[in-house]
Each structure stands twice: as C-alpha cells, then as structure tokens.
Amino acid sequence: MRNDVVGYIGYVLVLIGAAAGGLWLIALGYGSTTRATIAGVVAVVLLVAGIGTLTLIHLRRQVIDPVEPEPTANEVSKYRNQHPR
Image (cartoon, rainbow, N blue to C red; front, top):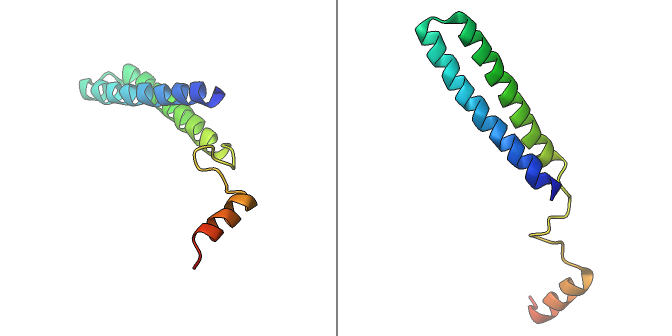
C-alpha cells in the first residue's frame, strides 16, 4: 500500500514539474530572467524528484507479481496431465 501513495506523489511531482517548465518557457519569452531562472530550477528539481521516485518504485518492486503469480509444482503437473503433448 505504501507504493501507491509514493507513486501518487511522484506522479504529482512530474506534473507540477512539467507545469513549471511551461512557466519557464513563458518567462523566457517575456524576458524576465529572474523568474525564468526560478521556474527553470523548480522545474528541473521537481522533474528529477518525480522521475527518480517512480524509477525507484519500479526498481524495488517485488519479484513475485501478485497479478501473475508463479505456478507451483502441483499446478504444473496438473496442467500437464490435463493437456498432454
């Protein structure tokens, strides 16, 4: 359950980072270097944090996926008896 909350936070960080990147482009267009610098730094920090969070969740997931469990030896033998070659 912990990965759900952390994944949600990572996703929101990526979305806010993308929005800050848009504000960075707008500030560059208006020639406001101070605001552009702040928005650019915020965008990079949020995007790196969000993508890093989602990457860590992916790398540290369980080996056995509950959606596709590994078959047991009993299940394999039962399947082979029902479906001979």
